[in-house]
Image 1 (tube, rainbow, N blue to C red):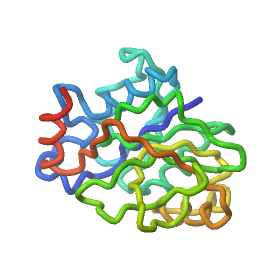
Image 2 (cartoon, helix red, strand yellow):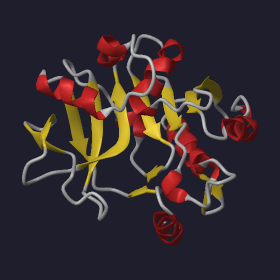
Image 3 (cartoon, rainbow, N blue to C red):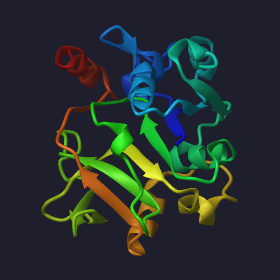
Image 4 (cartoon, one colour):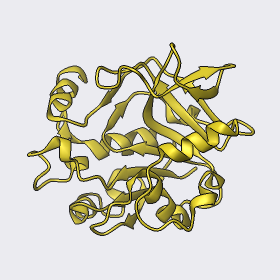
Length: 222
């Protein structure tokens, strides 16, 4: 299985820390955020990795190179200065991702979930890792029924962790899209056709999207 790390965002909520440093290279416990993502994929024996880059992307390429120093093989999908958002970025990278399901992980997420367990159930085009709602998303994103079927959020809701596995066909209706495209509308499309699944994870998870959450991650992940 191929893994994709989303690393093209500008990191505006992390300013001024990201003024001259791309967010994926900000360090948690003296390790760059994107290295945490690479390590999680490597532990799951996912060593073929695609990374999309945009803002200060050359710094990421210079830091990681071809991945050989980290025991992986890295290809880059360069969005230049026009970051395409999540779905747009994945669609641009599809030629590098092949025709089988692939794992996608946000570079600013820390999680101890074993990615080798992440699989795509039969009949599903996307499978999401869902976690307890953090303080910054109290209403959650989705709910679960029948073990793994994702539905719109109800009274028992969960937050999308930024980690999931996708079949290329999940994006097939949008492959001609030019420019930015967020992921959520595509998730709702798959949800409407019962092709969106998920699982609930109670382990360690931390979004590192603001300086405050960065401090929290540095204090908690020891």
